[in-house]
Length: 295
Image (cartoon, rainbow, N blue to C red; front, side, top):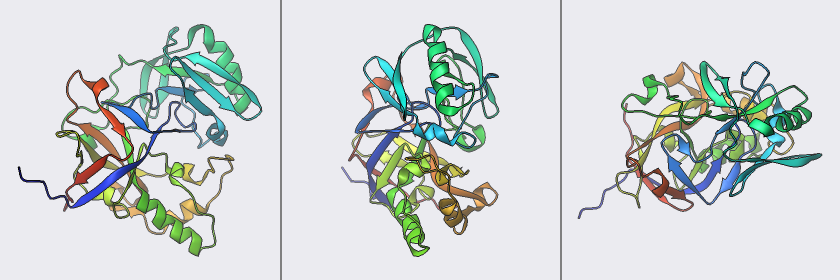
């Protein structure tokens, strides 16, 4: 059998899930790969009294809410607050929730809804509540960028996965250091998968990244990730700054999205066997290979 000669090769260096949209992430050694992304990623969302989503853009203290997934519970931690836990499958009344232009059916948390509402409101200083995605909902990524096939998503901004090369973070840090600014880590960009062994921003240039130990399964970068002020929010303190945004504006204007600033690539899952979601697991150290795209 002839081995495929890849233009680009790398390894999964970090895996992150963000159980609650815009709250802190969880670094994991392995994660189930589903059609909508990694298991439990953006499965819950904080909304206001009208059901509109909240993010760090308006509430930077969301960075200090640290979710934890146990066998049976979602546990929330925050500074100066007792932790609170909710059953993973807590399902109360159906409700409506809006994320960007999409309004979908979600679930409140039944008997846990009011205690969690009080807890979140204490942490964030505004009346808000937690909702859980209804897996029966058919929320899809943009057809313009996905093109062929379906790409379901939960409460992510718009796509199942976000890929980022570690070299891209290293390059940014070189620029920050030369400017006398503090270096940052990949958490600023909230990726699901950080890839080592590739050149900076190779994720921009590949057709797809194949999982070398799982023939037929691949991650296809589909849309550059446009950037808002969130990368300037320190994930440890929730204090906003300006240095990261200032640096990436100097070299990451992207003609594919009208000159907007991008960093990392949204991606979809390809080749996942029907009915076998639970058997597909991503792990640290897995090798990826891809061919460069020439537009």
